[in-house]
Image (cartoon, one colour):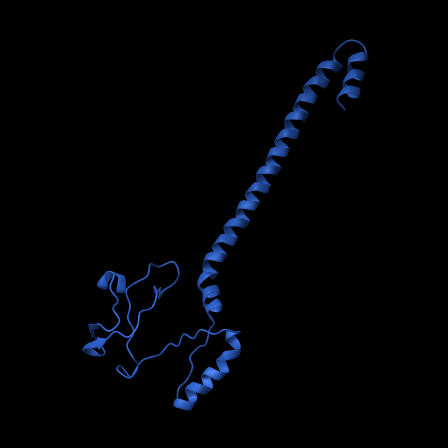
Length: 167
């Protein structure tokens, strides 16, 4: 959104006017810029977005995104205690790590690709089996024709030659 609306300039310190159905029309100061946001998933293109302080629109849900230097799961209880120290009535609907969200987002694609890979391998195995059966059938057919031709040939030598040379 910053690249589209402020073309090469820093929007920090500027103002933006928004009209939200639940909050009315208001002009707000821009205090920071975040990177591209993909709200629906990794497959979607980033859409322009902005965030409004909870005190200016004090209803609905709030999402906290916290960057940690260590294990993110171990930080969750401390974060919950910090939020409850400010407001003990707050409930947490769900807590998830970015790796968990990424895994959840990619699960359907991973399932589809796994299924496609499985069917591809099965097709290769089936093609190999068909090729081997076809080759064996052709060889058997050639040997049968040769054996029947030699069987009717006079004398024992051609039959002996076939069984020793090709068997």
